[in-house]
Image (cartoon, rainbow over the protein chains, first blue to last red):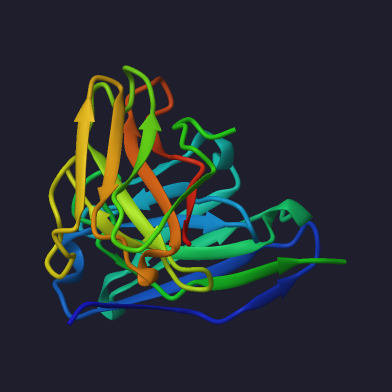
Length: 118
Length: 111
């Protein structure tokens, strides 16, 4: 069965960077895109970007352009999302999700809570 | 302010049929398929409907989706207590900054 397992919670200071991992199993890693979606407490879902693990191609929401970088390590079926210049508004649960099609996310990771606080 | 517009709340009694709307524009719903997600607080979202009206394996046929023009709807028939959750619509947006857009979410309460 398909599983996406994310790294644990992080606490960061404003201005720092955070790198969240998403390890895939149960399917051919390079066949499906991985997307990143975040959710602040009590708020809705916000898409951040995607990666094609086969080609390495990426796409980012304009809001995060210049601050977010999505990479992968195909040897361990893992995708990473790094967000830099953190501010308090970046405090949120960050999810990775497998995407067989645009905006169609059929499996989700359990989420990684990132807290930005001085 | 979400690109896709959903009512913030909806409610119904057990056994009732409820619908949740999702309004967009020509660059998103008008030209791309709509997907729906269910999220129970404290858990990750779950795909409920994809490609406007397709149900993934395991999703009961009480859930159905439709799309017309720049709007879409999620219908839940035979409402059950476990349907109480937040529901989100999502679509690709073909505007200059191509990206995935979500609705703001609808909190469904089963009375």
